[in-house]
Length: 107
View 1 (cartoon, rainbow, N blue to C red):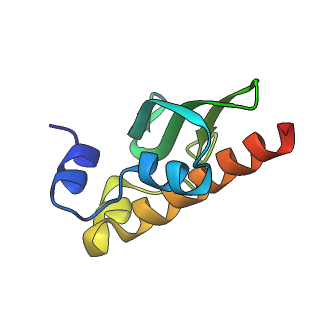
View 2 (tube, rainbow, N blue to C red; view 1 turned 120 degrees about the vertical axis):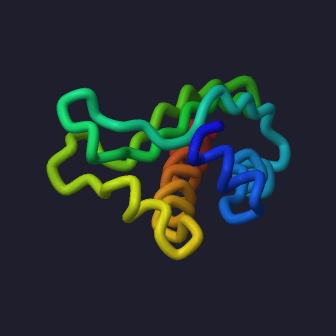
View 3 (cartoon, rainbow, N blue to C red; view 1 turned 135 degrees about the horizontal axis):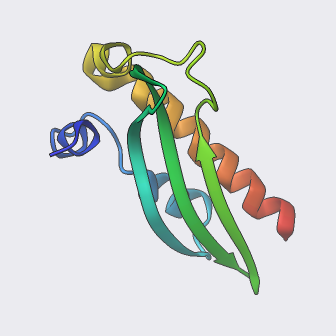
């Protein structure tokens, strides 16, 4: 089981689908993938990733967001999971908000 799934199952991190559905109640939302992944060039640094398709009013948004593009300055796994995953949740919420903005910009 991945770290993201463990935190979700423990009730520590909120499923991003809930936030997307609350912000876009009339949209058809397909959550494809979300979670943590390490950088191939630096296995000690991680990014939060969100991959979601949003369809609303005949407009489609393919939202592919990551918390950081490079390992420079990216958090470690321990930093993301500290304090019951507080930083992971914070970064995930920012990605959800970015996807909501992208979807609303199309309408």
